[in-house]
View 1 (cartoon, rainbow, N blue to C red):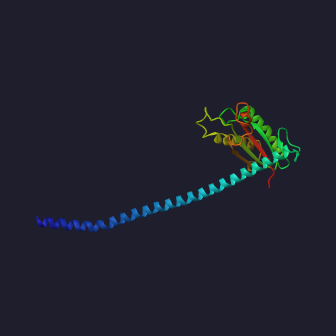
View 2 (cartoon, one colour; view 1 turned 60 degrees about the horizontal axis):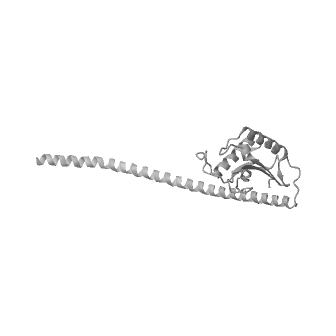
Length: 221
């Protein structure tokens, strides 16, 4: 019995000696795999931080551009209202001065309520504007800005987060249509302001004026 126990003990000792390097090798592999995972996570974090910084910088640039554009529009409207500037030779339906011109397109003409797909009549209107841009403003920066009233989205609320989302998508629809019609995509910038830049009070008598897409042609600096 004791001989058998000694034999078993010797066998176990030999087995441990044989398995020990394998166990240590397995642990080394696990450590290497974990280290690789850590390295991957660090790379992902670094990549996300870089992308976040770029996005924030891009957002700041977009806000600055929007602010500059709004200031130019406000100043041009003031000059026209006070007779300090002449509208010049602008296409039919357009307003503006020598350096900036704009045309508001009625949202109800372009789109059905709560939607961002051009109606047949809306497509014809955009086609006419594209011809005007190509003929009268061939070298200007073209801004396409969507606007809405303050009514919440109801029927198509599953499609849009809010009015800002809807207005941006409508602007992008018009921008894509302009591109199809020959306006150079490199000079088109599209965005939305939702309900935050109304032309009139948002009451039943006036809020239709706020549902619009404004196309603005600005001389490049």
